[in-house]
Length: 417
Image (cartoon, rainbow, N blue to C red; front, side, top):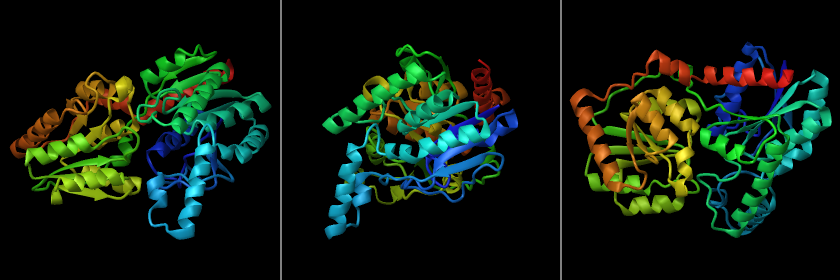
């Protein structure tokens, strides 16, 4: 059986969105699935990770990306002046006009390349993984032109993104367009996979023609094996990942300020200028470290060399309850205790409680966050905060390989149906 995986994010692009398609391409060939990947030659993404290598057992095909650069506007504009700034602002305005997302222009080269690959290699199933949502339009066109089956993989909601702000006309317009993409996926995909039950339930409400299956992200235990930890006299708590939309570090930072504890809070990734200025106003000094984006190997090493890990998921009018991001599984694989400021009745909270991986508090409850910090610090002084010891059963259930086995079984089923 042969599949073509269409993914906008693939090495050398970096960031959390790369891991799911990368691991699919890494493990599927050993499960009887000849795997081809279609990715842009240069997605012009703001993060690059040259330490990530494309799997040797998969065929990686590149098509030219003719489109705008990614990244947050404030960071794209940073350091520009004069005519350069005017030109950059014009490109950013153009980016807002592209629908359903700023990367949709990749379809101009990706569709003909995908059709050629399917015909030359006898591909049975095309798998598209989002974000961005436009990858599903590409896969739909390839499947329609060739007769191949199509599986749509949703890493984020196409209808109600938990972190997306919806208070501007442009955002509302794009959201409406993405809902049309969701309806197209529901009406034409032969099967749909989702990273969480919440996204699966939302997708089933669209009355899809094919099966909807939850295949969550997984823990890459092999990637963290052998990483060292050096206990520190200070309590170091680390958060990895960028802040955008409704993600908000301020309740935690306020709790850190109010606690008076000698805690080093380390944020690795993109930090909004407004949040940076607000944090500086608290006068946290050496208790706050803002670190720039780093390749995944460095990020994992920093997480491992921490006393605790910080997970932040907003309530977002209830949408945050269904979020079970790849970061949750990355933290579980690293094995350090987690302070989870997340919806207490949500999927992430349930998993952390069931595995005994850390403490759960509401994301906006500053007093509860301060109390959790104090409790973890007290445990550190008492017993050094040992690693979270997942049982063999949990390790098997959560491993990335197990998730890819579930995907392989579905691909065989779709190809044979």
